[in-house]
Image 1 (cartoon, rainbow, N blue to C red):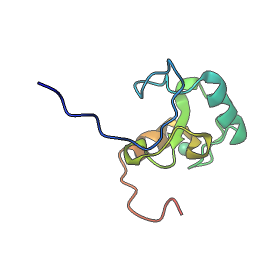
Image 2: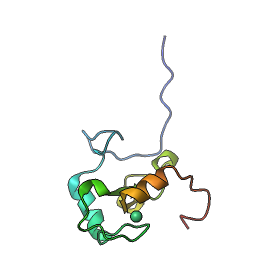
Image 3: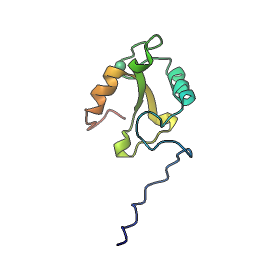
Length: 99
Ligand SMILES: [Zn+2]
């Protein structure tokens, strides 16, 4: 019994030793902080000021969802407050929002 070969995914850069998508270990604290800083500690969606927010109340969001092939690169990541993040994870971006 030989299992079929795994599907080929487009080039995906993943640091050796990093977790593959489970939890929040896919990004280092340092990179996370760099994106917060780039975005001025404001939620990309609602513009809430998150500079004093607790770590659990702010996060990163993928502009292009990972399910749809979005990467973990900086240009695909934005600062997001928890409410926006949870709304968006249930929201199907059908049209327009990325343009
Ligand atoms: Zn928000």
